[in-house]
Length: 159
Image 1: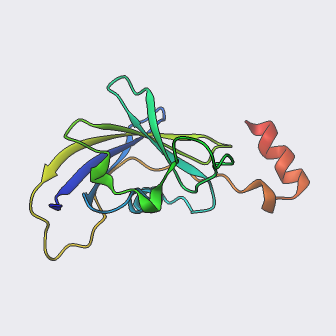
Image 2: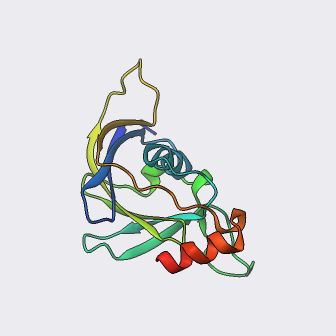
């Protein structure tokens, strides 16, 4: 399996243009991509997340989850788990789309597109890496479980 470098544009759904360009080895996993997205936006690892392979109209296809949460062991299709799923097994070429959802309570949605495939890795670089940043990421909302009842009520009323 030949290793290439994939350059993804990871656009946060928001009023402003907030995105990160991320380079990652094609042989790395979706968990590696998940971790660098969180780090590049300053979000912590306390929330659930999932990728969906998508078409050009951004319709959700195959889901790749953080954990195997399948309750039915007899189901015909085993869910894909980020840590076990290699990127180049599901990303076929430039222009391929992914949807990434993080923090299902506050629903942060990201639109991801494969912008470029490079055959040679930079031998001095550590992958994955952020190669371009535009826009300030919003502050991650506090986890409701760590808030007082009054703070939680204020947070809910604010929305």
